[in-house]
Image 1 (cartoon, rainbow, N blue to C red):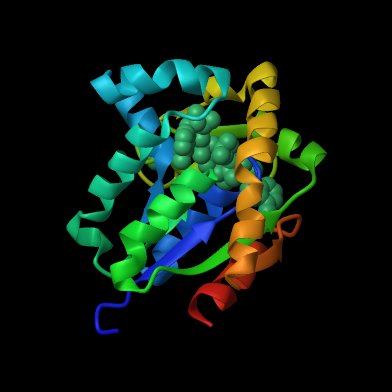
Image 2 (image 1 turned 90 degrees about the vertical axis):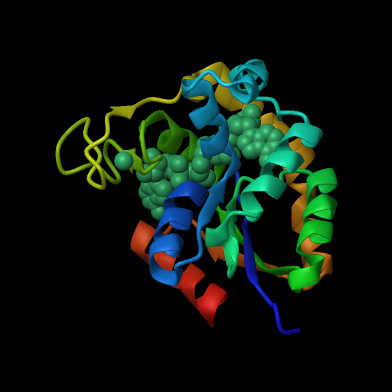
Length: 218
Ligand code: AP5
Ligand code: MG
Ligand code: ZN
């Protein structure tokens, strides 16, 4: 196929490190990170119609309706920076989205690979509760595991670091529940297609990145 693109689907529970790793993969491969969570948070901050619609779902830790999310990704993939493919972070997140993504990407060879970042639940809770995110660029830090050079300030662009609203304990618990019910079936879905690759997410950020790079470019 002449117009083959590289679509990487990062899988893993909330807090596994998808956003952290997607940003690093973006730097090393030049493929853009597409984080549906980041796009929703951007719209929330700017109080767009999309942001207002997404807010109640995100506050509860539920999925934003598929129709809205799928259309948003379709639009994003048409941007010029996506001509070589993309690193998908948080999409697809259920079987309806996965089949829609297959249809969208079919003309370009479909999904290349689906790495699963595996982390135990108690570790993901530790990671989420210590997380700080940049308001402007979405870069992710951790107060202990991955602190910024200057407290409260993003290393990349000097943006303000904040704690996400959906990182409250009740919401985190529902996000994990939604993950096991709706997103975990994607593991079997990509396994059956021969695209799943498991990565030990308990390793350091650098070690996980090396493992992912070997999978994506290897
Ligand atoms: P989203 O923003 O996607 O959140 P999530 O899936 O819950 O995942 P997280 O962002 O919490 O975790 P992550 O895996 O990215 O971990 P991170 O790298 O930050 O979604 C939010 C909401 O938006 C959803 O609930 C839903 O409402 C909506 N939404 C989004 N996509 C949707 C879709 N497709 N359909 C419908 N609704 C959608 O790392 C976590 C922490 O750990 C950080 O502090 C980091 O520094 C640290 N860390 C990372 N790796 C390591 C390591 N190896 N060692 C030590 N610490 C580490
Ligand atoms: Mg994330
Ligand atoms: Zn930043």
